[in-house]
Amino acid sequence: MMIRNALDHGVLIDIEVIGDTIAAVMPANGGFHAGDFDAQGDDVMPGLWDEHVHIRSWAQFVMRANLLPADDADAVVEILRKHPTDGAEPIVGHGLRWALWSPPPRMSLLDAVSSTRPVIAFSMDVHSVWINSVAAREFDVVDIAGESGILREHDAFRILSLMSAIGDELMDSYIVDSLRIAKSMGVVGITSFEMESLTDWDRRLANGFDVIKVRASLYADQIHEAFDRGLRTGDVIGGRVEMGYLKVITDGSINTRTAFMHEPYEGDDSVGVLNTSETELERLVREARDHGVTAALHAIGDKANTVVIDTFEKVGVSGRIEHAQMVLPEDVARMARLGLTASVQPAHAVDDRDVAEKLWGDRVDYAYPMKSFLDVGVNLILGSDAPVAPLDPWHTITMATARTADSRPAWHPDEALTHAQAITASTRSTIEAGQPADLIFLGPDGIIPFE
Image (cartoon, rainbow, N blue to C red; front, side, top):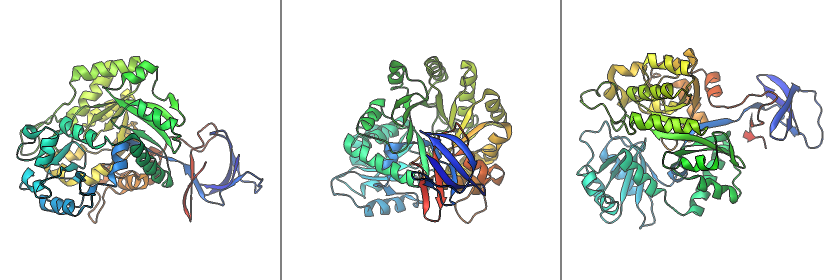
């Protein structure tokens, strides 16, 4: 197949594609034959990847109340009261930001939304959830939830998993619909960090899944599925689905004050939590290395990042750090030396700026780095962490370059990327012979994926 008359950085080119690979790139010669794809002068670029997606959660997100606009408990209650439901199902919202509230959350406020149905409000980072007394009884967490109704970390993840436990057929249809929307925005692939099994992707493939490319990652309690099959990172599971990474959640998040820190939070004596011990983390990374699976370790606090960098160094293997939100300058240099990848979500820097300044104080000077990673040679890749931020690569790119989402000046603009840098960090290929033909065309009628 020949792609004719595509515009690449102002130059018209023709692209020969054989199978799924670019075979040759040449100046456009004006010729056209039956079966050719005429780009009609539209800009061509490599398709975009979202390197961090929780696909089941994102697929359900559109059905949940959007709590991001709420800046206090009363606003959350009002949004949840107005959210349309069928009258029997739980009332669920997403996007809670309670770290800056005064007074703090109380379960009784959500009881006012409903005294007969579970009311569940997930924080924007899903490391905490606010529930009412009905939900506390139904999920058997009355003692843990206490008067606040706030559950953190593993307790919150359990509720998230329970909310995702809908019928396979319905869930898979939601996932396909959400990925078709992503495809229409130029996304050709995602890395999935959902808490699910390889058998979920086996089922989807058996039912004809072929929307975009997926790297399906596994958590520690499921990783032996990959080991038992002999699957290494990048191996094809079937169709467009490949084996992804071992995902380990090392610490918590800033909004819940559970990100693991070298020094306490401002006005607090807490340093956060280490969800996985250093000994266990090293064991998991070694085991993954021995089976050819790359580790992708969640780390937000500066000490959590130190711990995961130490772990990669001890095991003698490269890997990914997911989020890398607060990294000491000396640890940034170590990441480059060890060949580690920083998997960053630029929208977090914008969404967290107020809570970060309150809870981390002057330490925000080395928080949410992006340009610093590039300056010392760290491999930088971008994603959304959907549903924490939208599965929208153009939003991700804008946040990486603008470092603000409102009328305020850019937050720490020295860490902003150029547009070209953000595009490079959002793609996995180039327009060259031997590269995947994962191309998109940007024209007056929108984005057209090459198929």
